[in-house]
Structure formats: structure tokens, C-alpha cells
Amino acid sequence: MKNIQELPRVQLGVFPTPFYRLERISETYGKNIWIKRDDMCGVALGGNKVRKLEFLLAEALEQGCDTVFTTGGAQSNHAMLTAACAARLGMRCILLLKRRGVTDHRGNLVLDDIFGAEVRMLDTDSYDDIYAEMHRMGEALERDGRKCCYIPVGGSTALGSLGYAAAVREFAVQALAAGVRIGHIVSATGSGGTTAGLLLGAKRFLPGVKVTGIAVDTDPFDEIVPRLAEEAAGLLEWPFRREKNDFEMVSHVGPGYAVPNPEDTPYIEELARREGILLDPVYTGKAFAGMMELLRQGYFGDDDNLVFVHTGGAGALFAMDLPR
Image (cartoon, rainbow, N blue to C red; front, side):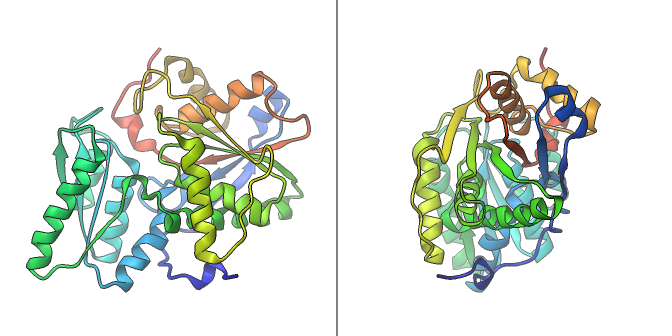
């Protein structure tokens, strides 16, 4: 078996990120709720994609790439963070984004420009169309002497997922230092890679801990997440065996991907007003609200210490209003 540290990795984030108990929320709901603050990872406005990009861009640099392509929705956190990380590494970044959602020059689209990314909007619902255009553009650049790498939506590959297997090891150490026995890990699931890494990391470093993904899109994550986790385990020659109740997906999409849910706004405001923490309305806000609804329904065990993984996304707060 290999260690994650043996794989090429470029340092982009400031780790470890904070891990602590949400004191006022925990007291209100009678449950120990801890938070892993990956919104405070030290790049741009923070977010989970940085851990993935540390592996993905290290591989790109090893291959001699100087240009990185990726994609997502118009307000993609992944695209914005790829632009930020590429700028830090001196790489050219080209973003091919879906002309869907908030396409005005607001939120993450402003940040994309600040980080110097080249942004092109494509009027399509198909990522296959976008990947085809990406490679067409890349081939033209390579004829001019550039070397391109192509990162899929969300950076959700087996290699990218290892970023969150490493993250579990990080907060397992933090929990041990705090004297906390983690019972359950919850995060947003938008493309699958983060949740896959959490599942793999839990099996490796926190055996017996359940992972619940709160789906903010309609993809078949029940299949995607375990597949990515197994593929990521294969990169390290780690055993990966599913066990009963080790993982579950819960949908909290609402009216659609990147469309806020009015019923989530009170939870977003409660966390801000009780703990001083910002959640965006389409990823972390949906995930936190979904977790709190599950808590109200008795989904979690009585003795579970919950860990909510804050995956960033604050840029969306400056692109759309909270619905009521």
C-alpha cells in the first residue's frame, strides 16, 4: 500500500483548516455539531476544490503543462478556485462555463476576471459539448507550443478525490486532540469527488464513521461516489470494501441545481447570526439546511458527534439574493 504523501502534490492551501464545535448551534439543537472550515483554506474565498487541485495541478506540472482548462456553471466555485490556483502557479487558465444561472458580471465571474482567467460562455446543457470544445481549443494551443491539461467539472476524478481522503486524516487528528469521537460526517455533494474522498478517508482513518452526502444536483451520486472512492483507493493500493450503513446520499436539490431553496434561508441566517459563519445558498447552505432537517427527523444516532464539512462558496452570496 502507498501513502498519500507519496503522490505528487503542490502546496496551495494553508492546512490544517480550523475544526471546532458550533457551541451555540449545538446547545440550541441538543446535538454536538462540529465544523471543518475548508472555507478558510487560504486561497481566494476558500473552498473544497483547493485540496483536489493540489493533486490535479501537481500532475499537470509533472507533465509539463502550462495551460489548464476546466468547466462548470457560470458561478462555479471550482472554476474560480482553479483560476486562483493556476495564477499562483503561473499557469494560463481557460474557463468554459455553461451559460446557465447568474451570468451577469457578479459573484465568482468577477473573481474569475480578477485572477486573470479567460472565460468563455457556452450555451449548452451538455458537458460533453463543453469537453469537445475544450479539446478543440487545446489542440490549437498545442500546435502553437503550449501544453494543456483538462480538469473535469468539480475536479471530481479519482486523483482529485484523494484530497478529501487526506482531509479526513487531518480532522481525525484534530478530533483526537480535542477528545472527540466522530460519529458522522456530512457534506454537500455537487459532483461527487469530495464525498468520495470523505468516504474513502473515513474507511481508512475513522472506521465505523458514516458519511452522508447532501446532493445539490440530480446526478446518480449513489453510484458515482462509491465508484470514485474505489478508484481513488486503487491509486494507493488501499482495500475498499463497502459496509452496511457506511454511506448514504440524501437529496436536497429543491427547484434545481444552483437555484436557492427559500426554506434554507432561515438556516443560513441562523448560522451567520449565532456562529458568524457564512454559507452560500446553493451548495453549503443547501447542505447545512439538509443536515439540520435530518437532525429534526431523528436521522442521526443519539451519541453521534456530527462533523459538517464547510466546502466554501461564499462568492454566490454576491451573485444572488437569499429567497424568502
